[in-house]
Figure 1 (cartoon, rainbow, N blue to C red):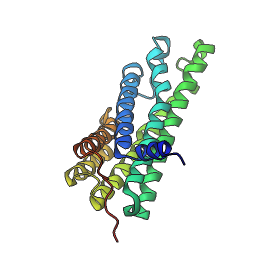
Figure 2 (figure 1 turned 90 degrees about the vertical axis):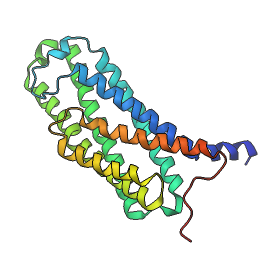
Figure 3 (figure 1 turned 180 degrees about the horizontal axis):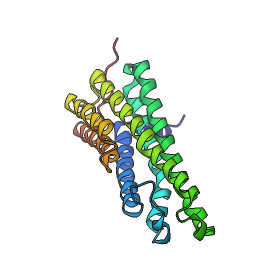
Length: 227
C-alpha cells in the first residue's frame, strides 16, 4: 500500500472527520426543519392549502435530507472508530441501532411528504382536503413526532452514557445530553421545535471534538485501551 494512501486513510479516521460530519449534519437538519416548518403547518389534519403555495422550500428541504443522512452516518462511523476497543457492545448496539432507526423514520417521513407534493402536481384538485392527503400527512407526522423523536432520545441517552464511560467529551456535555433527551421525550407533543434539540446537541459534541483536535495536533485522541 502506498504511503500516501496510508496517510489518507489515517486522516479519514481522525476526530476532525467526525466533527466536520457532525457539524454538517446539524446545520443541514436545522435548515431542513426550518424550511419545512415555515412551509407546512404543524397540524397534520390541515386541508393542504400549503400545496397551492410556493413549494420550492419544501422541495429543497426534501433534497437536503439524504445529504444530512449521509453526514450523520459518517459522524457515527468515525465516532465509533475513535472509541475503538473501549466501546461497550451493549451500548454500541443501542447507539448504532437508534441512529439507524432515527434516519429510517426521517427518510420515510421525507418520502411521504415528497409523494404528497408529486401527486399534487398531477392531480391538484383531488388532493386538497382529501382522505389521501390526511392519511399521508398523519403518517409523516407520526413518523417524525413519535418514532424519529423517540429514537433521537435513545441515541442521545446512549451517546451520553458512552461519553461518560470513555471520556469522549466532558461529563457536563453528557449530563446535558440526558437533560435534553428528557426534554425531547416529554415535550415533543407540546413544543413544535423540540426535535431541533437533537442536532443542536450533536453540534455541541462536534464542536468540542473539533476544538479538542486542534488543541493538540498530531496527538491520538482515542481513549486508551482498558489493558
